[in-house]
Image (cartoon, rainbow, N blue to C red; front, side, top):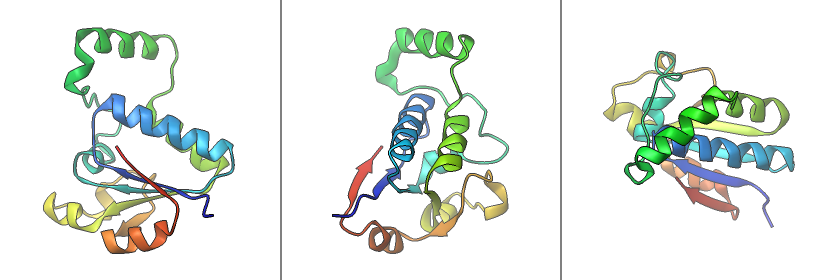
Amino acid sequence: MDETISIVLFSGTDDKLQSAAVLVGGAAALGKPVKILLQYWALEAFRADRIKANHGLAPEAGEAGRTAIDAAAKGGGAHWSDTMRMAKEIGEIDIQACSLSMDVLKLKQADLDSLVDGIEGVAAFLINAGDGQIVFI
């Protein structure tokens, strides 16, 4: 069985990006390859000029969620992008921007943070996912 974990990362809120980063870090620590396809709002969050910006939280997080996230950041918790960078240092993590989302948002590879390895279409992502798990966030 293919051990690769493939993630379609659609959401661009900090809580969901952090959840994805923790999942990716855990997979990297276990030696599992990870393939990520960035779509729409997640792709927007990976822009070089916006990666460290406040991307908000999912509506269900509410005020208590904002308080918890702020406390974690003040307590020295790693930013989701730093967790992704650490995961890439220890594991086989491939992050691709969705070509359709790039077109819709009128982005070029140069607009994206260096975490993003390239641009690919959905068909290529699905072929590369093989028989492994696909997670949608």
